[in-house]
Length: 102
Length: 402
Image (cartoon, rainbow over the protein chains, first blue to last red):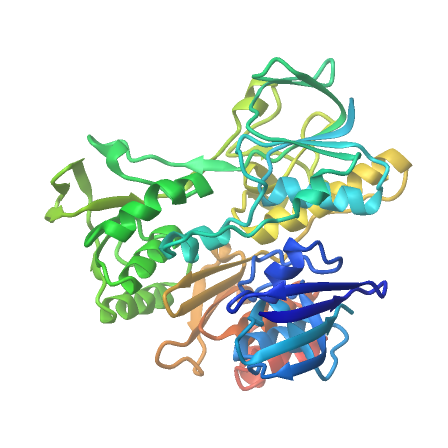
């Protein structure tokens, strides 16, 4: 199990335990995290699931070409650790992850 | 009595409810769904869910969203009539719902094969279809897929990846004939073939029976027949209510039908864009059009400014390892050009009309897709010469023009 924390724009923390293979976007939607829409259902097409990785223990795979391009072109204010959370899946190598919704 | 009644709980209906609630959380909204499930994402159904041994579901909103006192989701309900004079919607259950504003988001339904035995061909439209088809697909060794559009190609590519023998029957000369530039349709056809898919072009079905699919090119024996031959808009309620219908419910640039209290959005709506009436079957259209309509309903109620729906359309399809993305209106184009950066299983094709860029198709070149979406959205005419002057780099061109 991986401990995932979402920090909403209003400062509210939402803590979720996640199984291997679960996508952060689905976790956010299933737990009613405000600010994550994910119109395209996780196909890396719409940039409505932008998050900033605040903290991580363990490993996180780097963004792929598609994700990098979408972030570069679609997100107005980009941060060093900006990601699309539909492209982040929980792995056994990841113990905890904290992400902030801008 | 609800302020707004929404018929349909697909992407369009739920996007409208979400945006209405965001703009005015005092509005009472009733969504009528003819499905038993909480509203869910549809694109994954033919791209992923169908091929999973345990098909999952991605919800559009949590159950909590529909449990607030303002929002009411009625499931397993069908609307039998819209009474415009009394501003009410009649349900098959006998219940009547009155409205101040009505949104018709009834979507589309599958075209069925009309030849003998056509009912044996299964379709992919909603989650119930996946539950019916999934176990049959898991068990099958040989699969015949009829239709070379997005759904047919997605299903065929997914079944191939599962290790099935796949025959894809296409009436035209190549896959995706109506959707992408000829060169890209040809490349996609060749790439699928190279992966082992048996693609039969110019293939017309005579009849289907339990032995297989009989065509002008012989009989294809199979364990399972799946058809993806397109959809048609669910316009019956609108027609019966005497709203203008012409290949979809006719709306203006504000999303309003011929009745000022009734709006239509998503697959079912035909709206003016680029000088003609368009009906778009896409997530982009369902979402963006619903957001504009929600804003206009709130504007109408609060006497504020209204918005025009004038999108840069975009679409995508995942077929095995192929990601195909389209933006703009390629149906209007008269000429296509392929960028020289295309190679192997990557391609970018531009559509031009009177020398100006109208649409861009990309295959495994996501950067160009995003750049094209941006380029088509700015109020600048893009010519082939401008593309060449930027070394055929669409991202560079956009960054120069913005």
